[in-house]
Image 1 (tube, rainbow, N blue to C red):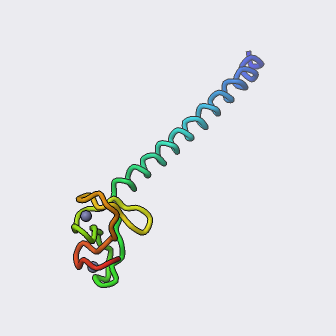
Image 2: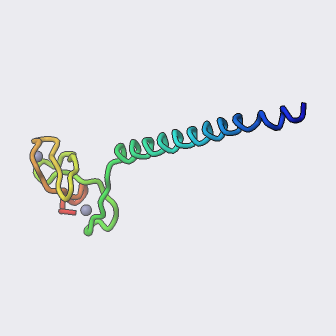
Length: 93
Ligand SMILES: [Zn+2]
Ligand SMILES: [Zn+2]
């Protein structure tokens, strides 16, 4: 009786271990995807030298929202490349 109890937990614990590791991996992946989702949703803010704090940016041509690229953006009004300016004082950031 006792011998049977001692041998049976072997493969069972192994399965549980794989299950837990798999669960943690899925949890981490979900957390990572969720963080990426939040980062993409959040409007990117820039430090404006003139206002002195973090501000939203707009395009310099139409003062419209921009889809940001590296060091420049695409104006959502005319769909052309534009520079990023401070939404408050309209100066380049
Ligand atoms: Zn500003
Ligand atoms: Zn524009």
